[in-house]
Amino acid sequence: MVATARTASGGEGLRPLELTELLDRTFTLYRRNFTTFLMICGVPYLLVFVLTFSFGLLMGGIAAQKPADVAKAAGALAGIGMIGLLIGIVLYLIAHSASQAAAFCAVSETYLGRPITFGGAYRQARGKIVRLVFVAIYVGLATGIGFVLLIIPGIIVLCRCAVALPASILENLGPRGAANRSWALTKGFAGRALVVYFLTFVLGMVAALTFQFPFTFLANLAKGTPMAGVWNVLGEVGQTVGAILVAPIGLIAFTILYYDLRIRKEAFDLQHLLSAIGPGGPR
Image 1 (spheres, rainbow, N blue to C red):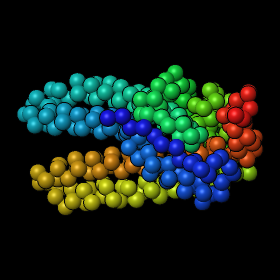
Image 2 (cartoon, rainbow, N blue to C red):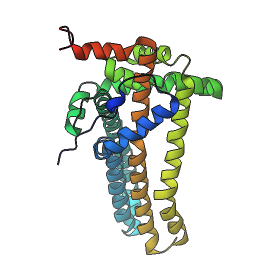
Image 3 (cartoon, rainbow, N blue to C red):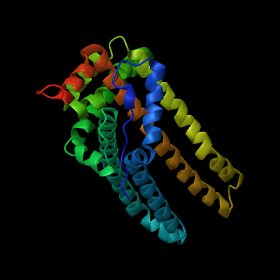
Image 4 (cartoon, rainbow, N blue to C red):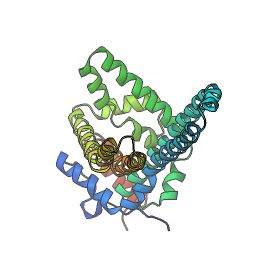
């Protein structure tokens, strides 16, 4: 089954959006392309779940052995654990960046009126994933330095670099170029980025309370019994489900914000219209 994204701008066209309209278009695009974005954004979270679950089974199997055997395997287990952790981190970074790059491509295509499939989004993202990793690291370091200095500078850097990732993917920019591009676009509009960050944070908390907390609560009540393990596994499943459901919202919102800022500051809507008409003019 191939999931195909549908356009979100519809008859409204490209134009400057009020903040409420930007959020409304975010949820409209997500709702119309729910399956597509779940598939695109679910890859890294499913990978983490599989790795965590597999490691948990391995640890459980070792713990079930005789104490003497467990003590003998402790050194080897620690080494395997460190190697596994490093491999897991690398795989997650690649999968997460690939997922984000594909999501930015999918949002861009649908927002500009061009449907795209799950496979098509990942094909468009191919060749851009490594660059996105370096952009994310660059922005993350800059934001981290801001938070170390004082909280407020960190928030300012976070908001001013809010569209660096979509800019990197959609304009083929490196770390410094993407950060500078975002800094220029968000001038005077950093508050919008802050609202999107806050919204995704709140939705993430709601998802955790809805899909994970009940099972964690039951696991604590059943501590020391066989059911505790069952509730813990269901809690991990719930955490994964909640994360996958919330993940597309921020990616969609920041991509739409990127285009909204270009429309406001660069008349991107007119550029897109002229590009669609072509050199021959209207027919």
